[in-house]
Image (tube, rainbow over all chains, first blue to last red; front, side, top):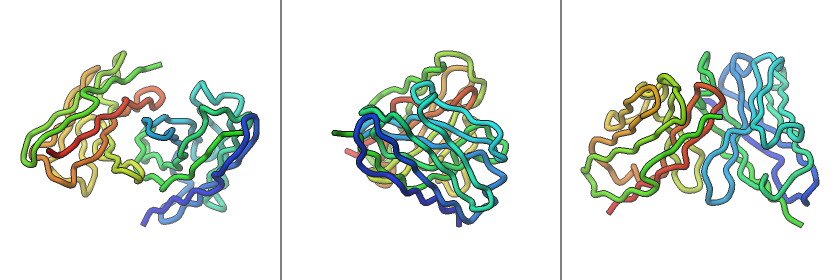
Length: 120
Length: 106
């Protein structure tokens, strides 16, 4: 069974940093692009970033470029999102998401999410 | 950037009704359109990809159609378990989502 388990969310002050992690199991992690998708409270979904299978290519939504960094460790089957210079508008549930094989950002398995709150 | 527009934003219908949700892209996206279902407090779940391809395990009452810039998700006979918010997402360039359609049971 595919499982994606996020951790690392919490309360952080504006301008602060937070690192999210995702542990994957039940599939060949190194074969899939992986994404982070977020959802602000009561709002819709926003794709945030993704990373290629071998970690050599990353993509970001414009609003987080230069502030967020996605990374992965295929040996540990883990995905991370380093978030710096956090703003109030970054507050959201962050989902770790698997992209389908050869799919181009079809998001076929989701974790349960971790909540990030940005407030002073 | 490609903008995705869903309508309606809310839909209320009876059990057994046929309901449809429309998703429009701001530019051509071929058939690169996915639909997701999200229930309150839960993560989204992929229903349909490539505009028409039903994911394994998804009930056959769900179907997708369209190509280019206009797409439709149809539920042929609405069931109580279908009460949820539905999102479209283009996977042609980037991965932008529509604003969502909340489906309620009357």
